[in-house]
Image: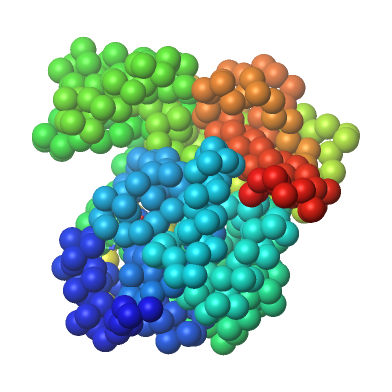
Length: 518
Ligand code: ADP
């Protein structure tokens, strides 16, 4: 090609400005870009929203040839409490608007569209720069042989593996289809691999690097610290109604918008109506509402028509079954009840040992520790991401650093209250029926292996997600995963099946001139 390769910080920054409108690289972006442009593998750990995509989009613009991006068919971005669902088509549309020659290949396209992209790939000098594909497509022999051809013409510049933690069985989101990516290095030798993830567990990192056969990769880790967030835990006064406490808190915050997370739908409705009656512009959001209503609640909140949303996890958070999480407005005794209740209802057919169910308990314990620490909360959070930081980083932006005496005093009171009984900070109190300490509860029941998950078409049209506590209490078992994850699994399996079938058909029709591209 006559096009020149762009290199050097200034030239790369010009590309960033021109195509994406950002004035400078953030964090480790430039290091990642320079690494892959020089041909060196790179493992890039950045929090969600940290700007991982720039790390392969700029290399695609910097050099003629193709950057292959392997990512799940549907992904989600979790930015400051909201999940943005995105799929390949949306990514590609946004890139085209920015003048980036990008395409995607997926089973959701028509054969015509796919064939056109294949033609472009096969033509001597494709103008295409970025090609998004699913791991399921990579697994097909047909597509792999096309890639090999492109590679042999020296046109494959980079393989970016997004959500790379999905390759690891140690991760929280192992996907069997990612395992197929292990052969990329051997099949496409000499092409640098960029693995991107927001999952910080060291075991996963090692596993990803080994599984993808990465060679002496540059390992880049960005901080998960969010300096703009102030962390505070408020202890509930046992004598005051928590709704009154919360109303006062919100009013004291002035004209800001926010989310209050609750465990139960009924609490959402109750609390939202209480806040509304007390002059706070507020709406409830949970999976029990119809789609139209949910969309309008979300729109009103984003456009600041509504100040506060009282929600279950259905609002913008995607978790596997009851994970305790920092953004939950906690009700520990209820949560502990759910944890223990699951254990009591264990089914004898369980064969789920290899999932990391203990994670839920660890998360729960972390959450308790976070609330009951007298040390820096920011440090506690970053510790949980495996980041060693000094408390000086906080600069008094958490209550424990700002008012240590006050926090100590509350913790003393809390200890005294706990020693009196089990009534800790909840409007509805459930007493754990298990005599086991929470860290000994066997969590295997919460998880289901991918091949065992029962997913039907009905689940796809069923919009329910989040945990329905009433259901949990009355039915014999908790849902093994949130409905959302099931939907994701279903879509992924559908994609896999589609390609498997096509690949099989193609193999058996190898000599059929009319065989279509997969
Ligand atoms: P991730 O994949 O790590 O979750 P994205 O690549 O989707 O993150 O980027 C998150 C947001 O950050 C996007 O809106 C993107 O435009 C923005 N962004 C990325 N890099 C920069 C930068 N250098 N300067 C400003 N904004 C950036």
